[in-house]
Amino acid sequence: VRQAVSAQLRPQDLEINLVADFEGGAMRKTGTVEGALSTGKHREGEDEGELDVEVPAVARERRLLELDQSLWTYLGSLPPSEVPQADNTRAPVITRGEDLSPEARQRSAHIEDSDERAVANLGGGAPNRWGMGDSYHKEKMAQKRFSWDTPGSKLKDHPLYPSVCLLALREVINTRLFSTVRDSLGLSYDCSFELSLLDRLEAGWYTCTVSAHPARIAEAVDAAKGVLQGVKKRPISELELSSARKTLIRRHETDTQSNEYWISLLTHLQYDNPKDLSCIRDLELMFQKLTWRDVQNAYHTLLTDPEQIFVSVSTAGPGASYTSGGSAPAAVSTSSEHVKQLIEVD
Image (tube, rainbow, N blue to C red):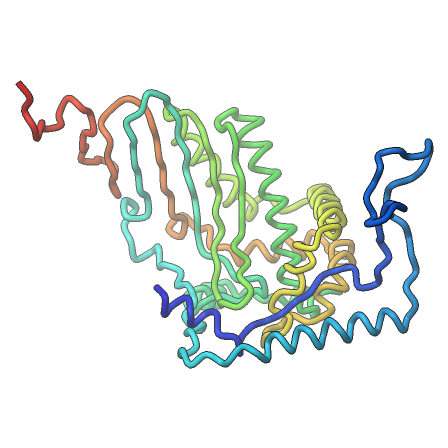
């Protein structure tokens, strides 16, 4: 474990991103007494919030230079690691579902408990953030004659194009899941759809999670499958895209107020991948110009055929616990009535 972690943390491989108020525009007031301690006696109407202070260009450049010198001084004191670099070429492999039996593509588990509840996860292959998949995914895309070269799209040449299409697709499928599985059919307490959207590895997956009563979890799974596969027969509408666009833009505007979000935007910008500064600068513009045809085309990158969807169902409630890959599980009881007594006490 130590060797595996060390291979990922070599000083010579570190990517450094800094997010801070380099302009010095937000400065707080300090007390007027010695030591800048507040006496607790404030004049009525005095604003103790932030002050907008303009920092001269010379001072700003000096701050950045000092930061740069301090950073490199610290990094320069760290000797390079002699541990071999970790192998980052091993991407996740999407399982060939058609080579497995229907029973092998579905797993079931039950936990003996006093409360009845159930959750199911549906998953399958998908591309990474840049629209690339492993060899199996590429094979399936070739069979579909899929291309990111969407006819008439004004955005298809942008490196962020696949990512934006997949983000909008995620919002549309989430909306359909809620309106169908939960609101219309009343089968699920909660449901969600997520995409892995890996940055550096050429593969990915999607997951759909539904929670329901154990008696109705099978119906909820079938309904979720219907939503996932239904995008092919019921194309995405302009109204659905408009709603997804508003959600994505609003979330982006809110998240830009946090340093963590800016760090996530800057991550991997220094590595050899399709990401460049335009992926940060043009994000909101991409959302605004996206069309339903772009998102509909992106749907075909998901492996949603019946033999390509994997399902795991976990339930809790009365009855012996078991784990099974088939429809007829061999029960393994966890009841205390069947536990052998190891020590006999008179």
